[in-house]
Length: 167
Image (cartoon, rainbow, N blue to C red; front, side):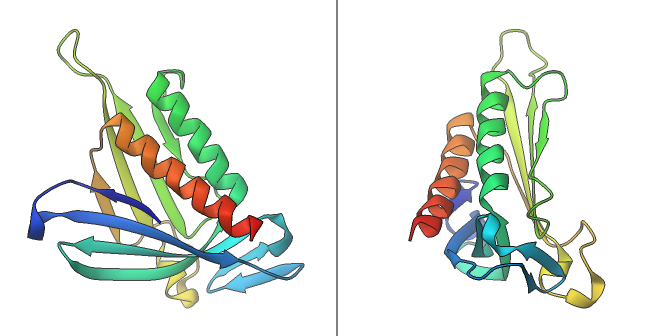
């Protein structure tokens, strides 16, 4: 499971959990809600859930592409290493349109300060209401993780996807 939290105490703790369930089997196009993907291109079914304290407040099943997750991990590493250029923002690939991830690196105002990071996690409304299609908006959580936490979350997600595909 890939988990990211705000590390707050008890009721103020926010978390996103991504549980990779299994590989999408079959060939050709498979659909889930408003999304159609090529099953043979390394696709897994996953549950993405939002938590406040010890209460799950939202959950939706989504398809994730291994390619998208792998590129995300490479881009997160480059962002943390400062090798991502002037844009300093990365987006989760469009091959997995139900899950929207946006990571940003900001430079501190004070000279000599460490950069800080932002992560926004959004579940597209089309993942739970196919009638509306994939629209680029939906329930979201916002985090300001340390670099090592952002890297660990991304690494855990990639490991989970790769493990499901190898099974």
